[in-house]
Amino acid sequence: MGAIDRFVGAVREVFAGTPDARAQAQKISGHMKALLASPNLMEEINQRGGGKPGRIDLHVDDKYGHPGPGFCLMTSLTPKGKSTGGARAHDHGASYVVYGVYKGAIEQTKYTWAYTNGADWTAPELRAGDCFVQKEGEIAFFLPGEIHKTSAASDDPPIVLRLEAQLLDRVARHTYNLDSHQTLSHG
Image (cartoon, rainbow, N blue to C red):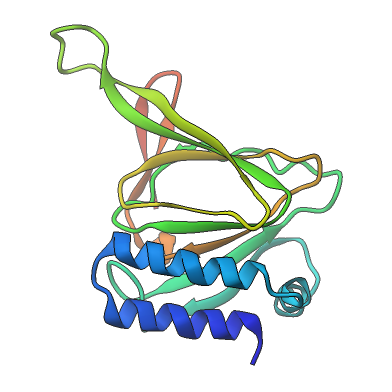
């Protein structure tokens, strides 16, 4: 049994025995850290992805997840010399995502709604909050409703594993325009 299969087994146990999203994300983070330390992880990723660039669903599970069945462990491989771009600010709806950096580094910026016009409680704006660089072997998670933006922070394209606690194409979520403070539906 490979490292990815061991990780999936541990994640299923977390979903089966822990109902709270925060507690799940914390426990899964510990298992993700062990997965990132696996000496054969890149070989397993290449086997499951056929050596091709782009999104690779390493495991899709229809029995377990949060807030309902259906979680996914995925990564995305970007060829050297190609831009990884940068995601727009977004949330994960009622789900959460655990990010683990296998190679390289990513910058994570959290956003919160703030009221800047004094007594005008009808005009919230998105403000950058915590910002940190996640390096090789480091884990971070974003709970339901948290808004964040992820971008590459290393010269070579980073390799990041993401555990989506719910398949995100099944969850209503949003992207955000940081200039106009508009919320756009996504998913």
